[in-house]
Length: 149
Image 1 (cartoon, rainbow, N blue to C red):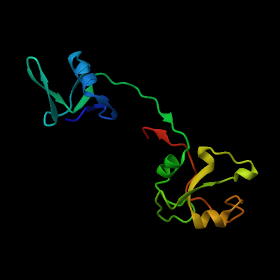
Image 2 (image 1 turned 90 degrees about the horizontal axis):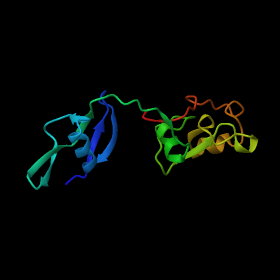
Image 3 (image 1 turned 45 degrees about the horizontal axis):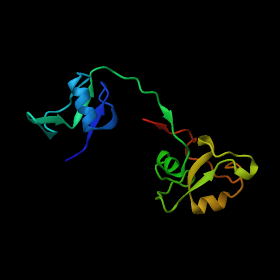
Image 4 (image 1 turned 90 degrees about the vertical axis):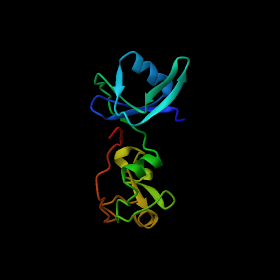
């Protein structure tokens, strides 16, 4: 039996997976309704079987602020779609490297606007230079990755 239920905002944007007990409480209190009648889990109770929908939607819209994520390897690669930002080749988690646009030895920080996914060949070629000095323009300007975007 699945133990989680998908919770959607009134706009049908998926918010989070919640445990089935929390979903029952929201349903009984009238805060959510079923998104679909086809997908449900059966819960045995003292008075019979309760069919709990696997997808529930809030009856009131909840504003969820965007949260900026940390610039860790996984998030940087996700933002850049595992593409080298200099030559454009497709990479995977084992072949991708992180390049600091302004090298750290020259005062560059490990921040969203200063890191990019890069293949090893381009990373070695660029070295401790800026993209302009190395004549290697970025395919797109680095920007933060936000939760929900």
